[in-house]
Length: 337
Ligand code: AMP
Ligand code: MG
Image (cartoon, rainbow, N blue to C red):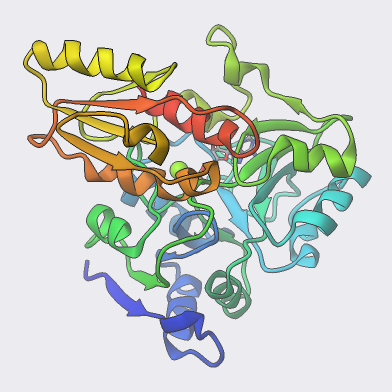
């Protein structure tokens, strides 16, 4: 299949012919990748089972991993769900549009393969002008997981999507690099207290400021318990070469690097700027000065290390405050130790 690629400059969405064409492909049952404020998504009409099946096929995604339905407004969100608890409405007022996905009882409006047969559905309102315009024009809920091959780091630029999915999808809207750089926070809103199923762009602290105590799925920290969200049990975000996550000061990282170099390995390093400046290795990528920059640059950096260039990536472990929790969740999933 030929993948049509449109370039949208400066988020110019008003009467944009390219976004019209993309929306038309979606309503015709095709797949289109588009930018959101988190990562690029691969969209299809969530009410059309065969369109949704094309997403699973293009990505090679396991059939039991449900998709998030994307809509433009809270009103459209309400058309997909039953029983919206008061705390979810509060969260929506504060964080939607934005990087927060609500898991709510499904009313069956979306196709069965969107929810992978669950009675709940994940819904999000993205905060990106191109995503918003596409959703308004398509005027259907759009199922959209990250637009990468399953298992690879999520795409934060259109080129990442192109590398993974060119020839496998109908279209790609190029809106430049995404902002947050990590996926949305997924929050279960079916219980008395909200439960974080996947840490992401909105932090636990931000959520608690609005609705009081929020739980974290114990399955995320504890390897014995199964995570509540089907997608969280898979290995994810994998670079081409093994990655080791190392806790401790730069000297600790350096001692692991030196030992592995003696074993004949070429070493790549991922670290904050402060740490990167103190390290010697074959290739070093500085992720940035603060945790927001580190989050935004992480997936691009994971994709940069290629087989043949380095044998092993040594990555600094970061403090788990704010979005650091999501960064460390992704790194643990990418890590081989
Ligand atoms: P992705 O869109 O690729 O970033 O993945 C979406 C994430 O949301 C995966 O971890 C899914 O398992 C999770 N998810 C989507 N719908 C549900 C749901 N109804 N219940 C629990 N987790 C969900
Ligand atoms: Mg994904």
